[in-house]
Length: 412
Image 1 (cartoon, rainbow, N blue to C red):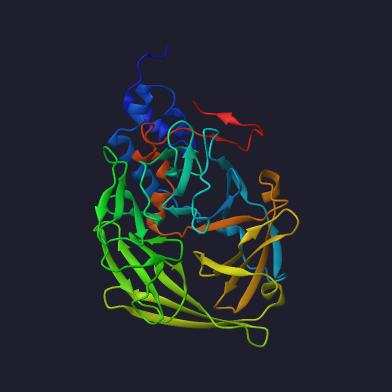
Image 2 (cartoon, helix red, strand yellow):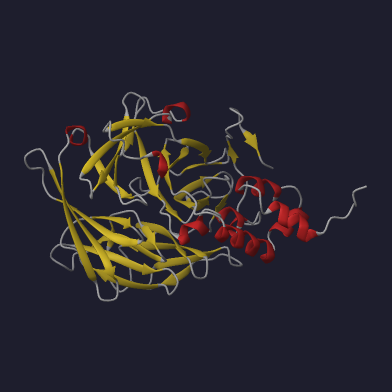
């Protein structure tokens, strides 16, 4: 006969072997279970098992922006190998969920250029309107795998303001940085998520600038491109250390795109089209303290590539430079491109399946891409569902679709 009392340590050992989504569901069983799964012992147990397991497969995340909702998809990077027999093939990403839930909607006053961000497993939305709570848009964090989310405290915006999310891998903390423009140097704000009562704090930045790109967080440093009138070329790469909350600045030669190149900052410059080719230069920051860079130059020649307006998204774990179209419509194919610098080959990949969950018939929907790498830092990120950022007191339940049911499943 089975005893009515099972040791808590045994229960936690069993639960630690479950998928992240299942653990998120057990948070909702009762207050007792939620408290048990939030214990430091359980979190350390999960991290220990994560470190002992095989390296997780890096993924590509797709976030498609609609009028009222976002749609989240992912694609393992191992589904994009180079096929010697063909320069083009088709893949279908996995659909995770739609966001936000019915009590929220995308805030129309939000700057549409920079409407979401990603850091270590969590999505960040710059502005969501919540019914019966806020008359203005508020920042929202969301786990695109489990569907749990949290709204952050309201933040007054000075004319134009842009915010970013970064992750500190040492203290394992998420922080949201809000940069106001134009304003005084001390009008910027920062907030640490998941530590006690959340509130915005003032933070100073010595350089007046306006944000002109989305942010990218690499090994605890948040990077984005800014525009300042204090220099001739106007552009500056803002480097914000998430842990120390200190700013540094790098001045590029001209406008550029920022990517994560194998765990280091990569800066992409384009030269004009010439002889049906694209000249691409990649600068990699080898030593941040000394500002030492390595430069690579490539020439891309391919009609399938040149026929589409694309931008650099990032670099895969195996070293391919990843390009993507910016908009999705149901009337035409959606392509991404992988350039292998070592083999000098370009492969086109058609992404099918977006239209089954996301309609974009009359107006194109913008597609945001986020590339995970295979470093130990992202091993922690893949298990972000387990940690205190998913405490039910912080992250609420959402509605999402599972692969076993075409309908919606509610997690109460």
